[in-house]
Every structure is written in structure tokens, then in C-alpha cells.
Image 1 (cartoon, one colour):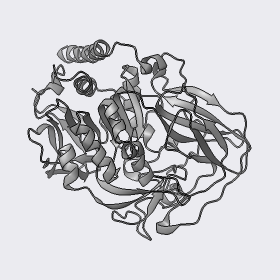
Image 2 (image 1 turned 90 degrees about the vertical axis):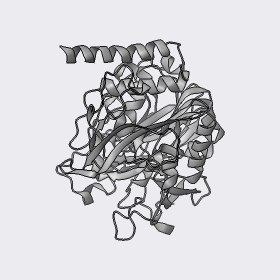
Image 3 (image 1 turned 30 degrees about the horizontal axis):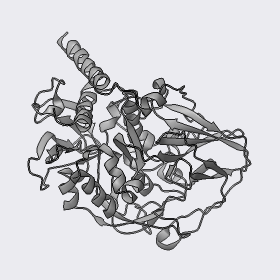
Image 4 (image 1 turned 180 degrees about the horizontal axis):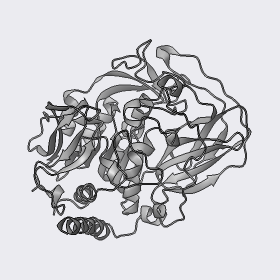
Length: 484
């Protein structure tokens, strides 16, 4: 009975915290009153039995595509590049991703049937760069009434049946409480399309972790991105890592009515002052690869009073150099230059310590982020830490507080390694803002369970955790309303 009563109390806290603090209707609340649908899900895709790695990391038949922009504003024109094999007619349905009564998406526009053809696999360019340079298949001027958000274009061939996504972000310039940064440079870093052409594929080495290839946005996202955490999830084909680690947060934020605007890593890089339009900025999921300019812009936002929450793991790890495509479009290509090292620790409090698993275990239960959770020192949220984590803090922030810490296990969750520990930290700044680091890629997985929810290997995140919901609500409330 005590356990059941505690759970009910925590659930009540989460609901009342959100509805009382954020009851004023905003653009996101209005948007999510509109009719939703689950038709954005993929229903027709390759069912590979016991897939082998070589088989998965090769170009797919059926249908695939990419967009001219990772991030775009209303009024600008998006080009969609599509290839079908064999040549076949197809259509595109465009969806905005959100809550929408639990359905997860809203249909924004559908095309008529379009004539498809097989477009070529490009040859390697300098530093093994893959740039498709396909003929544009469809052009869409983004309507003025499309809100900021993550959008999926569902590509559909009727016969033989095949489906895949293209993905893009619609950004705006309005003031908002929160900025949700998609980790799309990391999605692209692990993208092996058309075969073994990720940031990690250098000559014959397929897990090269130093300076090597360049990668670019002018290609589809492959059906398999990163073997360790995702295994094989064809129902996310073409969406990068968004549906895996980021959508559960977007779904929950929009369910709770937070005033949120969405940006790409590329926007954080290019728009320094744009970060100041929000009270809180969110790093989400697997946010490994940054440019130095991104880092400098986020530090500037922090120093100007914007709170930061790293609801992510393996964050701020590799420094990449963004550069134009070979036809001169800015910020379409990048390659690894070096690691952030101490700079990441100075920003977050800790840094990535590689792969490992652990319970997210409370160290300082009297801190305000635990208000209302009933959690005590040593209480753990099972298996929340992984697949990459942040370790022992060694940043230079005065007042850095360790919120949670525990020894990690090997990535197969079998061997306990007492020499490596996960830590989650927070530090506060003179302007009243703060920097929180969850220290795990999987923080968002237990905030919500959207349609099509996908579990990583050896994990079951199909049940929402009211403690993580409450901690996150406490963080966002302090971001938005400031110190009491």
C-alpha cells in the first residue's frame, strides 16, 4: 500500500506541477488541440531475419530520400530528393511530431502521386565524402502557419509496397520558454549510407575514432545507424536517431503544454543570439558532435542567464569543422578535428566516459530537483544509465553538486566496474540560472511512451517513470520561473 500510495502522490505532483505552472495557453497547447493520427508510423518495410551487419549497412531498395535543409523557416522552400528502386510512383505525407492526444503526429500536407526513378549512388569525394547531388523530386514552400517542430516526410510506394522517412526541423524566431536542440550532427556522424561511409569508417577501419572521413547531409539516413544501442529498428528508417532517443521528450513536453521551440545543431552553430530568446536550452539524447562555434554560443547563452539541461549522454565530445557542400551551400559537410576534453567538463561538469550501464542512483536527495519524489540517498532508477554516460566530475565550476552517482557495468550489463562511475551534476550561476547534466543517453526514454516506442537491446522502457517526470518538471519549472 505504501508503494502504491507513493506512486500516486508522485504522479499527482507531476500533473499538478505542469498544469499549475504552465496553464496559460500557448502556441504548443493550441497546436496539440488539433486532430492527430498514427498514420505517420511506417507499416511497410524490410523485415530482415537475424540481420547481419554487412547486410544492414548497405543502400536500401524500395524508397529513400533526403532534404535540402536540416532546419528551415516558414516561407523558405524545402527540396526533397527521392529515389525508388525499382522505379515506381510514390507519394509523400508530411507530419509534424508532437503529442496530439497521444497519437504523436499531425498530417500537415499530402502530395499527389509522383513519378519516381532510381537515382545513382555517388562516388567517393575528397575524404570519402558522399554527396548525392540527386535531381529534386518535390519542392515545398513551408507555410507560414506551420509551427516550429520536428517534421517527418513519409515516403510511400504503393507497389511493391515500401516506406521510409525524410526528416527536417521547422524553426522560428519567437521567444519561447524552451529550446529543444535536435542532435542531428550526431545522427549524421553515425549514418553509414550508402555503405560504410560514416564518420567512423576510414579506409578499412570500420570503427575509426580519430580524424578521418568527412560526412554530409546530402544523402539519406541509412536503415542502421549505430549497432550498439539501436540493434535493428526499421520502423525508424530515414529519421536519424530522433524517434529513438528524442521523440519521447518532445511527446512529453507537448503533452504537458510547455512552450517549446525546436532547433538543429546547425542553428546552435549559426545563430548565437537566437539562443537568448529562450529561458532554457535542452540537449537531447545522443549529442556527441559539436563545432567549436556551437560550444562558444552555448557558453555565451549560459553566461547571459539561459539555463542549460543536458538530457543526454556522450555529449560535447567530438569537435567537428562545419563547411560548405561542394556546390557552396553552408554547413552541409563536416569532419572530426579533435576532442573537447576539459572544455566539455567546464561546460557540463563532467564528460563522456564511454559505454557502460548503471542505475541512476540518488546521491543528494535534499536538493530541490528531488522535491516531491520521496527519493532517498541510494535509491536508484533501474537501468536508466547507458549506453554512453558521463563520469567523475572534474570541471571548474564553484558549487558543483553531484546529484546521482553509481558504479557502471559493462555494456552487456554483466560485469560491474567499480573504477568507473556515472555521475549526474548541477551547478548554479550568478544570474540565477543553472546547468544540469543527466549524464545518460536514455533519460528521455521513461518520460513517455509514444506510438512506435522502441527499446534498446536488453532494456524495457515501455513504462513511464514518475520520478524522472517529476525531476524533469522541477528542472523546467526552475528554468522558466526562476528561483522561488
